[in-house]
Image 1 (cartoon, rainbow over the protein chains, first blue to last red):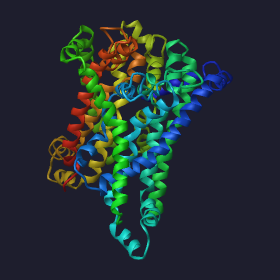
Image 2 (cartoon, one colour; image 1 turned 90 degrees about the horizontal axis):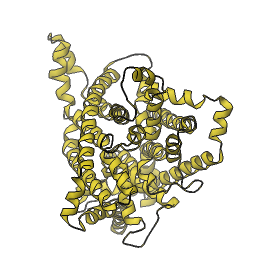
Image 3 (cartoon, rainbow over the protein chains, first blue to last red; image 1 turned 90 degrees about the vertical axis):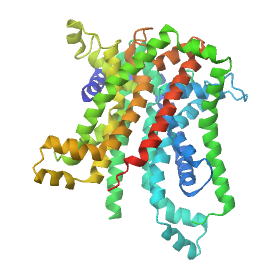
Image 4 (spheres, one colour; image 1 turned 180 degrees about the vertical axis):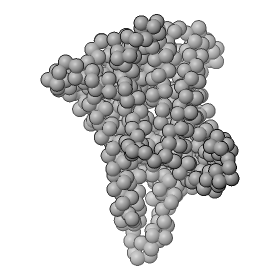
Length: 241
Length: 269
């Protein structure tokens, strides 16, 4: 595992540091990286809100079919990404039955990323909501706190570590995502070309050095996120005790 | 928290609407589109020689990669939970890399090592073994992307059950082999099973990394996911839907297996 990744780093600097820098800062790679990060950021924010909301509903609400919905949450993990892309195209593509066509737009990228990263925040927050101490909430309510205040002051602080951990994993996944995006984005340079698809194109046209250079940027991001989650987790658990 | 009935219904509606628009309707539509022109067309599309080959190749790769990952996963989890060595925290962080790194980067990294001009590739070429643009490379890519599943599922279970029983067995004179097969393995078996199901789903569904190293040679290095992409690219949309549907069904079976295993995986002791 480490050997192949080391090979990427080594290959990226084959033509010297200056060449690496030129490749990474070329207009097309910058545009692709920017779009990737921006989309991942938007998707992460949506996931934080909807992921927490869905987790809440799945734990505290009761309605028929809840168990089925709960199982459905993992579908994006079980479904191949290329199939995820095709299913979204079937509904929101050029021949979709509802007349909404997002194919080859940035909205399509966002949608594909929302699909594949859906489970991260939900699955990370859900167990924490189950464990939440209801007495704290009731105490707050008996002291006159409204639902919003209770949520903001009592519940949210308890959920925060799980929300951040789930969001960070989802962010990492969104940054590297390929399969669900490749068909739906149209891969238009400067418009809908994300980093992973850009790298793929470079590999196909035999420019492995260029591909490796942009890969290193993604690799670095992943490592920062992984180390960040661990560091934050350690900090939080120290903070609590 | 006492939530007003109206708020509760509102939250429920938002959650269900979001899931319907993002998951349920698109997947449902693929079912509809596949069978729109009848069962016969679907059957024809998934029984072409290319589709049958893709199906068996996908299975073959998964059946090599998953057992290897399972053995690695159990050993690594044991080492990480029971062992104490320098740099453990680093290994802990590194195990997750395949989850966080783009599959395309993983594919590229394998080409750079095992490709004909790669670090180890020339040695393999001299010995007449082709790895990249052939099945061995696809197996490697699959192993790489599904590496963390078993480790990550077994680790918390191991931690939860503790090592008291193992120590008791050791005091009573059990060999380490006996301890593993009689005490440890039964305790972690549902965790392992869950990890295997997740790895299997990922192995069957992997697209990006496999796509980079496969060379996409029809009838040779084409898995089901690659077939889906090729058919879609060739405007054979109904063919792509048919192959997708096969994968959707596999995914649904996976989900079902997950819901069966999940409650058992939580340690009862």
